[in-house]
Image (cartoon, rainbow, N blue to C red):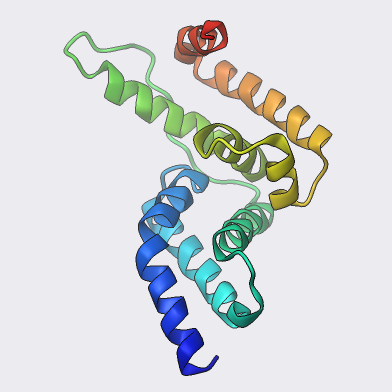
Length: 169
């Protein structure tokens, strides 16, 4: 990488790191250290091919998803604390719900998490998600359907939110 490419890469990293850190945090189910590792590894892989990349955002996003899935396949198990049985009446319901969702996301496969993040957090079309993950649109649809069903099973408190979002115009 020559000095112009290095400068361009550093500018890209400076400008886009916060957004990609949030994405890494979601992909790792809220594990800050794993998110930092994921982003760092993905940036290193992106830097190697920097001068051949047309769309750096898309390329880095794709590397992150594939890297996370690869790591998940190697581990195949991870510890997730139990979901609390009850809700608090002291105004912490939103925090508890966020924790429950985070724990439920941690129980999904890396591919299911990636599809949900791309489709619903980043609001990408099914075709964009398919291209990013290197799979068919049908696979994106079925994975999203199964992942949402599993998420609702793991976190029943989301049923009301999910039903309201389906009813919204």
